[in-house]
Length: 434
Ligand code: SF4
Image (tube, rainbow, N blue to C red; front, side, top):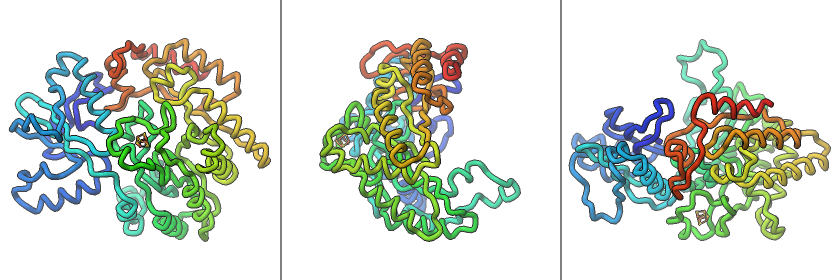
């Protein structure tokens, strides 16, 4: 996420690529298995640096200026120009984001003084076969490092020890999230066989009591999904396949995921599976009954609410104000209300009293104190529990962070209000607790 120049919140400054400050030779970005394997091969040769340019998904520095006329690379504004004028950072961000949304990307070049940063394009999205090969559950110990043996419960391990990753990537495109810059927009899924073998393996571990805390990924319900026309997706620059509307090319059939949950639940030793990853509820609200049936949208929701919620389901409307949600690349709050109604309706039918816990963010670019007061009024009106709340913290290389730093939208140039000072942020965050 810091492979190019980026805004760093903690120092409130524009930083160069982390390669400059770290003085490392090579940076691997994204999901690193495949570039690391290629680099390991390359490092067997003492002259490895001569062939470094051939390795995808890495960044490195070179002294010679790259050829200007190649169709396969894009020259960004230099770091010095960005420091001189923020607008060049804004332009670089737009170029980077559009490029990183595509499956087939160009290399990016950025000059730092006398040197040139080269960011090679990533590997293509991993195939299911490759994903299965990278699921190393059967060769890993699945335990914390022995040096932590005396520490008792380790919170990070407690959280993941009973959860299983079923796919990578996210096509949601939320503006504040760095997953797309890291894992990519295209979904790479493990085969059901590979996931089920891991479930069976987990069920035999000595600490396992029968509860799988997640069969998930960055977003819970994107397993085996993607464009019907794969060629159209290869050069598609859209940041999201579901915002501002669900792309007509998107196959969001939930049947494979439902089948996976059922098969996993039937494995000996498994008593209960909950879905801890966030559910993209906006994908489940299609009004066209034919499309909804074809994609098993209601079936999925019923399945989750009936079998995979442990009393409380957490979802992320993030805000109530439409103009803030637009800046977040999130659907209107009305969609959440529709989902809320469906959730309550299904619970009534199955005789359960479960709660929906919404996540909200304060101080996101575009959000004023008045917007937060409105949010507070609306959530109280619907008696929503606003306990899952956070104040916006800019992460490097996201659209939200670019707006935070620039004070305007880098795509449109439109001015954007940003609550930056600690007192403004505190006042906004305090609205959750009115
Ligand atoms: S499904 Fe649609 S929005 Fe998503 S990558 Fe393919 S063409 Fe683009």
